[in-house]
Image (cartoon, rainbow, N blue to C red; front, side):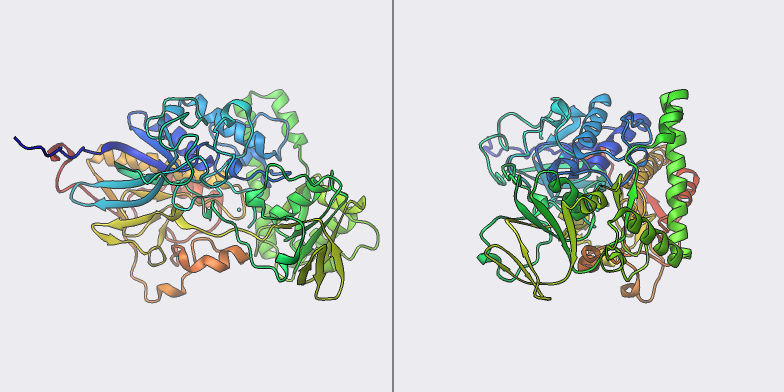
Length: 567
């Protein structure tokens, strides 16, 4: 009689989602709505849902897109504020998970490291390592956000971790047997309280379709260049991605290094309690004041049913933002002048607008920063904050010395210097034993990869709300799954056109922001035309992904060996 223990067959899931942030929860809800017979699971490396909006805890954390477009298409945003704070967004994501019964499908503290596709069985074999409660931010792993509303939200769940699942308002911007409430991690057992870091235990699952809803930046570390003399500085040096819970800035002098969305959010928030806050930038960014509350939306919502009003306001905001973007690209000098004029009116008389708020590049070469009700301008106008455009010479024990010779006194230095990109959460993909080199792949409709079967990734718009694209991706996947079921297909693979020089192609995220330029070589590429080209155009994508064919540019196949024949 043999003592050999038979190898356990991995659990099989129809659709496996990596990341329980804004994108991942949205994808799962779409599957519940449109493909209810499909089994699903969500793997999340941390102990709570929410992704970006649960990871980031710095003062003032908020969206910089309106919530009528950052919210899900199927679930109206009902809060009075159009520009919402992080905890409110986190609650919205958690409430959505609860409404669609997703809590039992989320498996916390599992970080996906490898996914291997077999054409023989038409299945992915997914390997995940169990993580501890300190994964990507100690103190934020309790998972109680679904109950108390604390936190924030967008995508992240694998590799070194990662998000922008919306990432709106952020710089340049999935438990092995869960049955609990949405947003709550396991109470005990491997990966529960008392553990720290990876436990070393691995979990293997198989799935028919794999969705990477991980955002595009590293959760474990932000971009943080070395600062000359930083070891001489007596105070704390803090990156917003790892904001200490116990940092008290009341009555202290703060220097915020950076000029992107994180910096312009932090400065007015810190200025409420600090003695003074200085935003120190090497070069300026376009900043526009936007109302935190949409008065027209308020009037529409008073007179129409919630869902009808939501759809109208959502389309109003989509069309307005598209018009602004198109005007920026066609008439950049005009938009530059309008942005400059808006800043000049909001700032004190005599303020040097051209030095501090007039970039050399055109609007939307980099993402435009929105400040609700002009809070940044107001803080400067009231003398609680100022903006300095210069280069750092070195840090001293009590401040920052600039190249110009000027000294900025500081008790706290905040390095709002950006993110580190990380494609598909850092997981390794292989197809029939061969590793997938992401920079050698082409993005199909901005959501699949050439040569990679039954796989999707979610990357939102750079010129509009993240969720607009995330919703389209999830609905397209549902269309694709229904088509495959109806025609007996088990696999769908994008087939790239023949191109002579792939190295000359644009990266998937085609912005000139520093965080993109630093890592563009690690990303999938875009082709020269649709369906391999991204146009950052929601209306065009609606036509392409909601009503366009699902058969163009792809190859459908069946499994050589059917799952029922598997041992």
